[in-house]
Amino acid sequence: MNLSIGIVGLPNVGKSTLFNALLKKQQALVANYPFATIEPNVGVVAVPDPRLTKLAEITQAEEKMTDLPPIKPAVVNFVDIAGLVKGASEGAGLGNKFLSHIREVSVIAHVVRAFEDSSIVREGSVGVREDYETVRTELALSDLSSIANIKNKIAKTHSKNEIDLLQRIEDYLNRGEKFEFSNLSKEDSEFLKGFNFISLKPEIIVLNVAEDQYTKENIIKIQEKFARLLTPERPASLASESVAGRSDGGQVVISAKIEAELASLTEEEQKEYLKDLGLTSSGLERLIQKAYTELGLISFLTAGVKEVRAWTIKKGSTTLIAAGEIHTDFMKKFIKAEVVHYQDFIEFEGWKGAREHGKEKLEGRDYIVQDGDVIEFKIGT
Image (cartoon, rainbow, N blue to C red; front, side):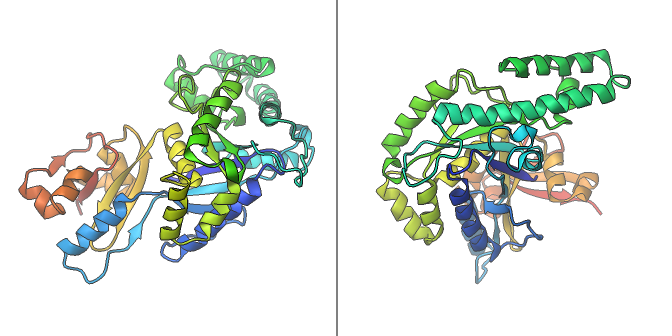
């Protein structure tokens, strides 16, 4: 599954600093993970998953291997979108070229400047609430333009219900109000997703704070402050989980400068740095984890002598769908799946121990995969 996060925001809010940190992580990852050619504005980052190392160690011991098997984490593509400015929907700045890039991502990471620095020009930036609304308005205006064109093109070929649905979205966007998807049919939801409307995409607000504000205690206070400031009029997304009622308001607090520093350190040095700040994970890691939550994604694991690997699927997916994530032929030739929960795999030290203690289950194609399931697929010829 290709998970992509588009980084958007006004100029000079910290997007480039954040993206440069991502590129450093990409360079470290490429050394042991094969990639196709990546465009310059895309950074590939591993999804943090400490379970993989433990699985590799157990596999090494169980199979009496000299070295650890290769570890291949799931990955996320971060797409760097040039700074949007007021009027972008009408071509201001680099305008529509970059708005088109946003349409292709899975989720938007909206970077908002939550720090003060007199040496950095506030190009179009006023304050957190105003900056956020400026970008959201441009995204909505871009969608309104698209809707008008779509309605003209499909007026004679689509049902009245679909035309009315587009009109309802247009009315909501014109009023700057939240559009509710909870009562839509599956067909209507699929119909809307086909247009990739930007303002309806799942969104994570990334609050970029100063280095001296980046501690565990301050992060909680900042989230509480801006959840109240930004959430009430925040447009809806297609995320499965509503923002309402969440203590973080759908936000992640980072310090782009600290992320850049962390990216240049070794793994042990990063842990020590974060420990000094009272944190257990970096802002980038929390951003990726938040994207998984917003999109309703989980990981299942495979462990063998050739590789230990994490695979990304939608929550609620069956073993048949999971098999297809590895290879489409697996779906056609699926027989059964051996499934061991991660904790059991660790406790009983691998496949053999799990089987001996009755922790391995043979599942058919309709089993609902759980996050962290270790799976070995049995495929016919």
